[in-house]
Length: 176
Image (cartoon, one colour):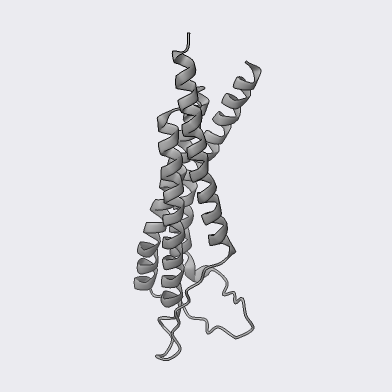
């Protein structure tokens, strides 16, 4: 019984943190594009970057391009929050859990592809004001994306495990 109350308490806390994240993440995206011209220019390499303000149209295009990965991220957070709302109520194995795990896994994979496209679009937006021949397109796949793909795979496997647990729980309920 004590283990169940720990799960419920921790699930309530995680549910709360996820709710805050759902509110903060869109604010971050909006402020990123709204204040983009106030951020210091940073370069990962030693080549100098020509400083210039990003026109309002490019800021708008950048923000609009961020909406797909942002929406996917919000859906992921909503799914995980819903999962913890069930744990908060003491519901551990259900078909809804299986569905939420599978959906979250697929959304994570979608987010990886959308974030690659978004980052590529950002590279074009940031170099658009450069003279022709000095504009750039950067397409990258790094360890962050690989980690998310691995996590998505783990979550999908967890959905199978939860489904088996659900079947066992149903069998135990029918046993007299």
